[in-house]
Image (cartoon, rainbow, N blue to C red; front, top):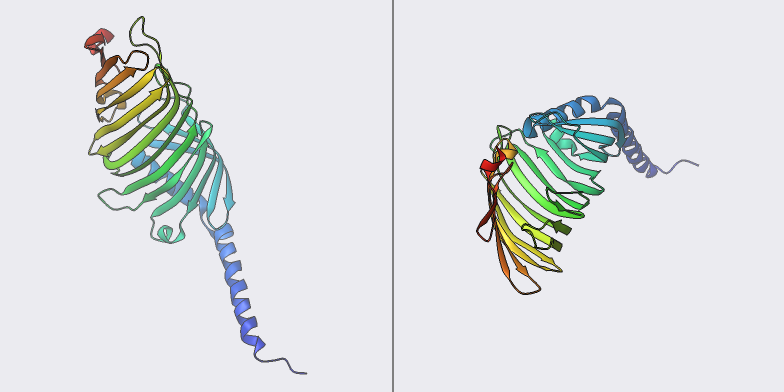
Length: 280
């Protein structure tokens, strides 16, 4: 009994598919230059952000998913410090941009007890060769200056050129819960907020802080302002106004923060609490 010739095209196509699958596996997991890709990506990150990444314990996934057990981030231009460490770092690269020496990757890593994820791109063209979009959820921070933040969430997107990181364009929204600020004046109770939200617009070195709102058991906060960014973040100039309305008696208090971020002048209801001169 002869074989049905109509079965041969199906078998031939099945063979092609199997060959393509095996060729893909061989290319991605045996021949693909992961070491060169890693060095190229880290160089682009350092060029665009002045951050040095130390990646450890690499693992590969399908179809081009690279994971590291740990990642340490350090500032190349700042003082030498241990840096920030993240765990379970995952990058999923898009194949076609890599062939043109461009990077487009989905990122995800765990840090501060929460998770950050999003998309990062390097197009190699000006202006705004770099682009990042992402979100953070359930980050746990021990303190922010004189306050304490239990949980932080946010979303952001930003475009910039490596020649001037701070003069890009973008925006961010932030939500923190469980915020506790020390009393600004003697005799005043600490300000405890269940929830604090705000939005930041970034444009050409200026950060505009909008729609700051906070609610707590002892009152509510409203406010906004600007931050003129500098290469040294500590020298950035802040100008922020906040209003606190007591829930107990309805009294309204005004807090103004002005000057360099490293030591701004602070005024409560017009009374100066500190000024840059007192830091000398």
